[in-house]
Image (cartoon, helix red, strand yellow):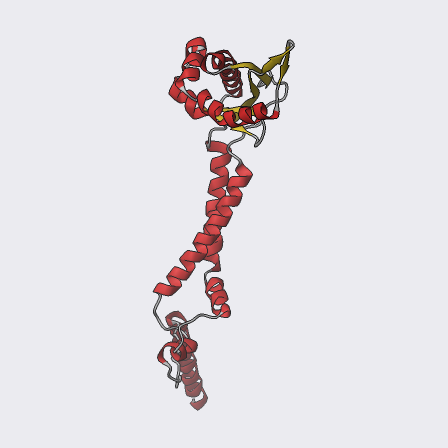
Length: 257
């Protein structure tokens, strides 16, 4: 006997409990959309860009930057990225900007630093539930880094390529939550879970319901089937037959008279 399921069997299992799958997917998707849209607090993002060059050689009063120096600067970017998120910078930000109401640890969680490969440009990204505060923190961290890095490394040429716009004319859109993405993820995940639950229920259900089940699991032919009796319908049929019998007897008596 082979217990392997064919593709048709999988389809029939899903078809048998399709409403369970549809209901579960709809419930999870709707809950995810409502939560993302109305209950999850929006998060805004502001960013600045910084370029850092170490001191170059001076020849006849003109700074010369060779390819080796550029490569060294690029390799140092990872070091600068870590320095920005250390107390050496963030403690200064907290000290200089008490209006933020943030500790160095809180700033460390909100600040992220990234860079594009083979470039000397770093991007300081700050996320907060207030766009204005995120922009102010991003600018403050960049300015503090520019002031403090010469004392830590032999770096004199630090430029802020662009600052985060605080007074933005257009209303900034939150970067989180992304309702559409959350709904899509919820749909896919819930669909997979629902199908998994369907197959689990089918696997745990060891009852025999059809002729095909008898042949598959018992390897015996079906000699006869006993249909399920609807008691309500049986009672109605019984009452109808009794009524018909009484009507027939009454008609017979009337005819004899």
